[in-house]
Length: 99
Image 1 (cartoon, rainbow, N blue to C red):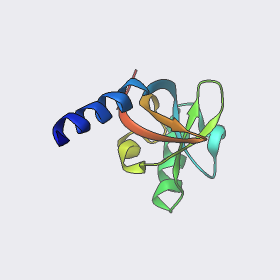
Image 2: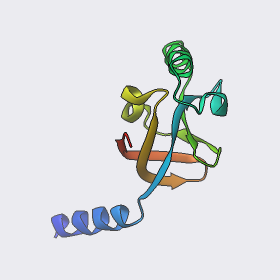
Image 3: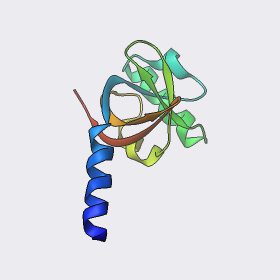
């Protein structure tokens, strides 16, 4: 019975996951580094290494927090497609794809 409940909960969560296009930036620079240039990538990597949290800048320019920052650590400064759950202004990332 527990397995069935877990599967139902997982299926319900997966049904509400959304996908967004945008760029991984950092909380200090936000949308200033929404372009995937070498300069922007280097700045985002430096800021995150210095302690800034990564953020997601949507293709519309909205800056969203990332609940599980480790999920995007290999994509700092890059254009990506994020799949996950949005709660307020925070995304819990379930997958990251480079377009």
